[in-house]
Length: 344
Image (tube, rainbow, N blue to C red):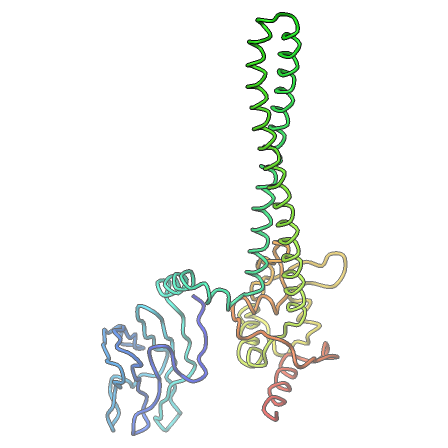
């Protein structure tokens, strides 16, 4: 899974801090068995109980003395953190904590989500309502088609029964004995016809019910689609995302470019190419080019929608519109918005 930086130096299982003498330590937030990879020394198995801290000494622990990248691995997550040391002082502290879920933990969370419909509806309520409406329309359409086929078959049977009835009635006039025999057959055919007529009326009644249900389902679909379109049109990206995730995502997408020095006009050309007839997705930044739009089931969504699919809490209704910023740099605009948020 993709690693996510933690701004408060905590994961779901560890807190990275300092002991009473100011040296780095870790505290277990729950009982945890883990493997630690120490720079220059290799891997070691460790176990901490909930609330236990290692080390809790006043003096410096020799196990936590090597600056560089440390890795703490459990069944649920992998924490990568850097121990830094100030020159000529020997002071060490933790920095740049990144947390990634293991494949087993992601599978477990998907199973929990599958068992909890309310959790699924809370993440994407409009898209699920729209999908359910579409499924209901498709199901009712299939039922109507089957009812229509059944009604056509009953009509054919009714025509054939009428023909038999008329033939039997004509033969009755030709001979008395033959007439009595065929009269019995005609009565039987009449009973069959009656049953068929009753079945046809029942099929027509079902057809009318299905038609009414189809109209209702289509209205629900139209309402759900309109609501989804309205909400998607009002989506905005949170300031928290711009301040913490936007620039790192650009740097991963363009590792050899100083993206913060680029204007948004230059950034748009890097992502999608120059405007014109040849406009196309040049990159799959944040997955926006490959994501399937639930409205038309075609690949390609807005950046706000793509961010909302991965980080639902980082996207919501807009309350601030920023315009005339195309020629500003990424660094300048993001910093301006961060300063504005701090003042507010």
